[in-house]
Image (cartoon, rainbow, N blue to C red; front, side):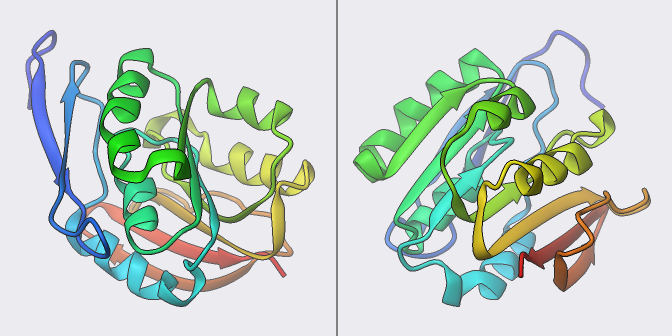
Length: 191
């Protein structure tokens, strides 16, 4: 376990597509980042490969930016990353803009408040918030209630394996589910 106040440096590797092998570096001053593992991302993007070409992607709790960057590397048309912490937003912009240019945008905002004023619609949404804050279910509800999902959109929800799965709108169809380590990965489709 990390001591409080220490800064840890980490990195995640883009595992597929045009930027395969590129490493994204991040500083985790609070010890609260837990990027999706390479294995879980590989599984997720195998599930999504047919859906990525030209997709509009929302990485709602971006953290290290691994999910949004992976989607862009594998052919997504645009990705919008929302991250609450200002230092992480600056880091994401600094690293991702040179890689993906105008295809990537980073917004520094509270995810749920940002959703309430969003006027865009998305083909694919990643919902991987800090587990203990209970943000996944309200984010799913907001996406549906505010009409932010395109028809046939895919929604990826990651949660702690041993907790109850976050509630999602009844109309969403669960396509895939996988447990790995402490993580539960679920992929939904909005009919």
